[in-house]
Length: 269
Ligand code: FPP
Image 1 (cartoon, helix red, strand yellow):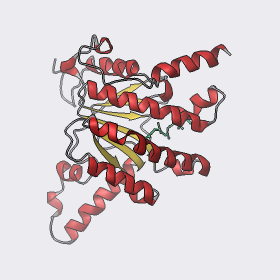
Image 2 (image 1 turned 180 degrees about the vertical axis):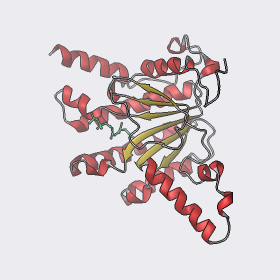
Image 3 (image 1 turned 135 degrees about the horizontal axis):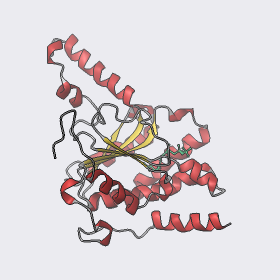
Image 4 (image 1 turned 60 degrees about the vertical axis):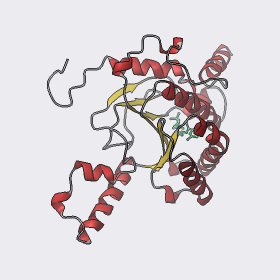
């Protein structure tokens, strides 16, 4: 019983409805080292199902709670003036889940776009979807394209949502595009370098990932942003995604600020 009450209290804090973009001088950002923030943060939003089960609810209730968390983390990322936030919403492997859960998630993405699109646009967000989008329901694909079109001239945080995404699949698609160009004589094999490959990834135009966050205790990459995370710092927390609050996100920023990034070189302090 106590766990249930505490669980609800934490959820209210993490997924609160009235959370506004924090100002630069917000108490939330006290002790943030503004000169040592990551520019591109990626998040594996894990633990929705386990969290819901722990509360005696259906797994799908965890995904609904996860939407609220996502909304508040995006607002925090805007307040921190991050360049990009990329989140893992549905992997190429998630089709293995029960049909009812897959359908619930597709519907949730659709509802999320309907409900949040205008506010994100007003917040100057540039939304972008990454993954094999043609594998998603046609109506959802249409909503995604319309959302991207609406926000294409915005200049704020790049918000990338990975749906039907797999890092290996993305690399294969990029290589296939390049192979076609070589076959057509537009490129020669010697033209293939890091920059060309990056231009053919779904994340083209984004900076490399500086910080990769995974919630809910597991410590693996699960086929997310394999290329882009080559030099990312990793931050793992036991907190399940529905309870991952703006304060938790800021804690990850602070941890990042203390990392010594050498990119294969020697200490650059
Ligand atoms: C992983 O938790 C989460 C997912 C597979 C879905 C993520 C979706 C959301 C957070 C909903 C919001 C997203 C958008 C774009 C509206 P899990 O189900 O694997 O949890 P478990 O590891 O406890 O089973």
